[in-house]
Image 1 (cartoon, protein in one colour):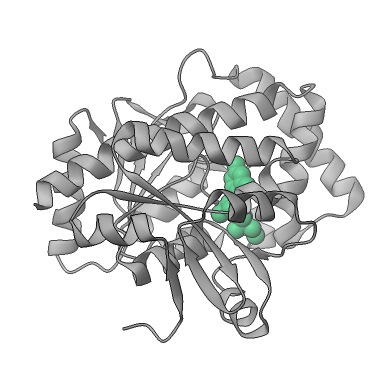
Image 2 (cartoon, helix red, strand yellow):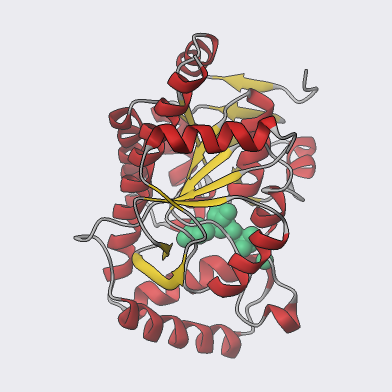
Length: 306
Ligand code: PSU
Ligand code: MN
């Protein structure tokens, strides 16, 4: 048993005890990904989408030295509307737990919490990755490293094109993190349907994905399997439009001297400004559609295990 207190929502606890599907969700996207009140509305829609897919949502956060495993509507409103909640990645988690107060979990720290709670699936639209220029800055998201440590299947729409997606794929390959793309040949780029990079594996059947996940763990790996699903065609942003916006955002970040863990939020906001809010809309849509696929795949996995 974990020595870290977990506050597991009743519905989540019941589903886990009954072997039914649960999908863990991050809270950093609520506090740092979108402005209020879009963030609260989107978080509610993301939870509804997980249910539509056939699973119980469990939004993860830190509150008063404890890990929240499943948030109610009041918790989500609190996280969405409170200013200054810190971004909590793996390195920050023990500190924020020790200090008390609220903390918004990234993909990496949400996986830590999901594994402690025994939740085998997680969904978010965009994972962190290897940043552009990482050859010099060494800015590689802890999300990727956590994939080698937490036994959780991660459903996502790939990683954002603010990153170097080719290097992100290389990193996952080097670390032996299985990557499968659900019903697509390509590695998606968040709200762009394709990064232009082929995925190492395409799988079209949820049951086969469930077997991939179980095989990885049966082989003795204590790590994640990454499963990508592209945005729906009607939500996707044209790659050339997104790339032009990213280049402008990167130039602005360099001018403003933004580095470290603040860069992801800065770049996302800058891209939204350049595209007149088009990408923020797409961001919300892809969060919701990815969550639904996460629910479907988690449900298939729970049935496979039963
Ligand atoms: N990608 C997005 N939106 C986000 C993030 C990633 O499209 O808000 C957040 C997630 O919480 C992810 C984190 O886990 O940024 C990665 O940050 P860093 O690169 O500092 O590890
Ligand atoms: Mn970083």
